Length: 143
Image (cartoon, rainbow, N blue to C red):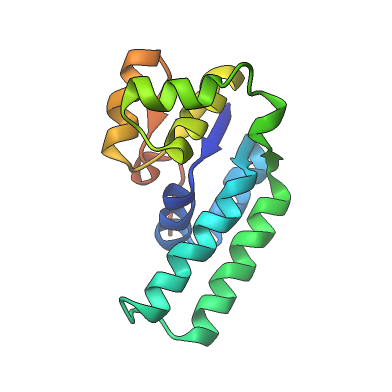
């Protein structure tokens, strides 16, 4: 199977499955976008500075772990797929952010399952006939 993880689903998967996510990524064809690393970094920054849910030393460990996961995945730059502003047009037509439309556009082009917990993306995916899966529904066994 092929899976494209958006940033929030990748973070959620780490929280839900811990090290079991490594085996899942190694056994499947998994993708992320170049922007995923930045979105994850931003989300972790928010958790330290705004929400104050996690300490700096913990957030560094999480970020390093996610970077190691990204190194196991195929990381795609949308510019290698974008034709005539297709991502921007999709974003406008679907009422999504450019970031969110990027995930949907690439998943559709790869014929990959988009792993996302974002309700707006899930709703839009039905209009593009792109399969989605929530991170909590990944076929990963936890102990």
